[in-house]
Image 1 (tube, one colour):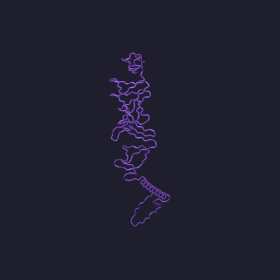
Image 2 (spheres, one colour):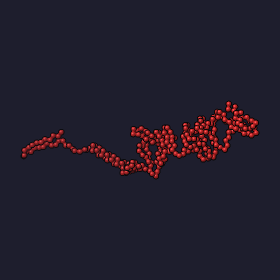
Image 3 (cartoon, helix red, strand yellow):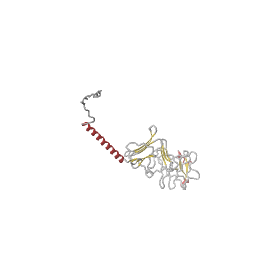
Image 4 (tube, helix red, strand yellow):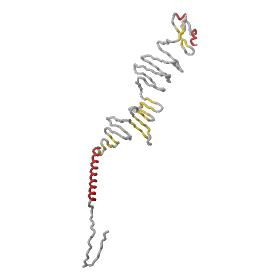
Length: 291
């Protein structure tokens, strides 16, 4: 430490002050000074490079007061022009295109749209894959532009709300269970066929079943029995000609041999057979057919 000596003297007295033996230089000299200048120069270079990179990024990304490039911030949300690629999931409340263009969602693997509740659980999912479109929800519904349900599916049933359901496949439509519909009709000049290859086919209606062929014939083919049953009514065959070519015929009698006429007889179990017509009924003569 440097000690400062304070000496008091009277006037007229000469006192010799001691010479300063230690001289202190103020500042940085030598290699320290060169290192400091080099460090300051390096900081200046880094500052200029950062400023240049910032300006370059702003120009490349098209930053503006309204947004960034094709991405604009509006009062209704974000508006994105052109094509965009999202590498991570996109969370949005509503996505729609411009009025004069369509909305295209494209992916190399699949496109998945999820709906979640407040707890983050998935309540609905639409997945479009390369081989299948999968919908996971409690109910799936397709509406028309007027809001009318066209097709509705849930765990219990599938409802078609259109006025007409048309199946154009060459093999028709295959139903594993019952079908409820007011009308089944083929295209004009095409045949309508209802078929059950290994089981039975039944048609029930509370107010009647109507089968019509306006320009053709009606055929009912079965390996076993064909049953027409009416619980409260009658079975009516209304036609100009009714042909029963394979009914069992009784033996020819002398009265019917010359005329070639027969009468239809009914067994107690409902079986029909032919008997040679005579002056009176001849069903009793051939009643052994019912045995």
